[in-house]
Length: 116
Image (tube, rainbow, N blue to C red; front, side):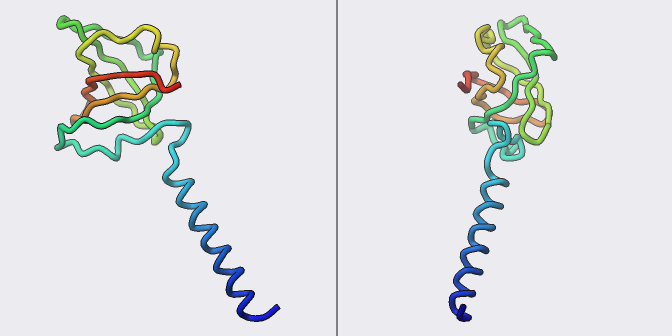
């Protein structure tokens, strides 16, 4: 094998390893995403896929809203406040998509949907 062929093969292997590392790092683990992608100083609504923690319960608020807990791909658990009733059929979804923005210690959701 010539030196040029070895260099081409080595280049292909390096590119494949870079691609593999990129896909493993940036692909959502178990279908969820990270709260680390949110700026706590921004009130712009973004979507995030998270694991719903049904076992931590749902707390109704006097204004008709609800709070509950979710976990992101990094294992960070956040309280979520939703200004309306939580759709009952989503409690069995496992992974849900939230639309909203992150405050310091909780996530303010404007919408919640199933991630089937």
